Length: 281
Image (cartoon, rainbow, N blue to C red; front, side, top):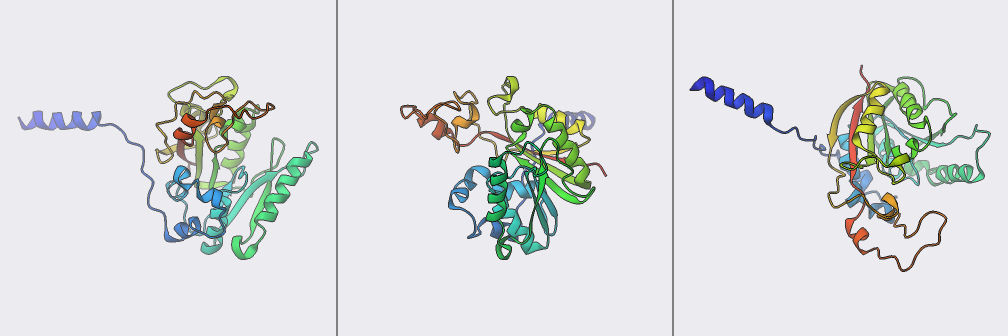
């Protein structure tokens, strides 16, 4: 009877579901950075959907680290991470438009200048370094120099440019220290398949994992901290139908004031995968 009981226990253990890793508690200085008075009210209003402290804690952010953010956009994460780096003796690096590109547009150049101006107050943000980023840009930094590299809601954009995701992941692998972390947050298409050309802004977990593994990374953990089961992923203007974009027409078309946004606003922001990869060391 004892042998049967042990065998039954073993079967139960093997059959037990594997749960995604929970995000650990954030440290006090990170919590303070999230609550910082420097943050734009519009960004703070999105914290309930974006879970910044929990997401960064899941990726393993620690005091004193060198952190590289790929494609920071308007600086949602910069408002948190630059003051955090300043307070903990770390370094925050962002990517910006490739100033060495012969095809650099005036708009892209102006966007980089605006970003650098916004985060140029050393008393609040410390030293924010911006490195060139683009299809022809050089490395993200010295080899084996970063502890954490992350990109949030950008993978679909890289996939829309042939070869761009492979380049991003190759450059990320090079700049990370052995044992360093690649953090990814991305609009999740599952259980639906990827749309042709990723035109709806959603990407499957399998696509992201395969690309990262191709670059040499190992998947360390998944988190459901940014999951949204209400997201049906079948919206007329893709993920951009949902907040915060809230499109009512396709690009190039005038906004449609008659478009009923009720059910899309009720969904909230997209369902997103949150993944942690590690560079073997």
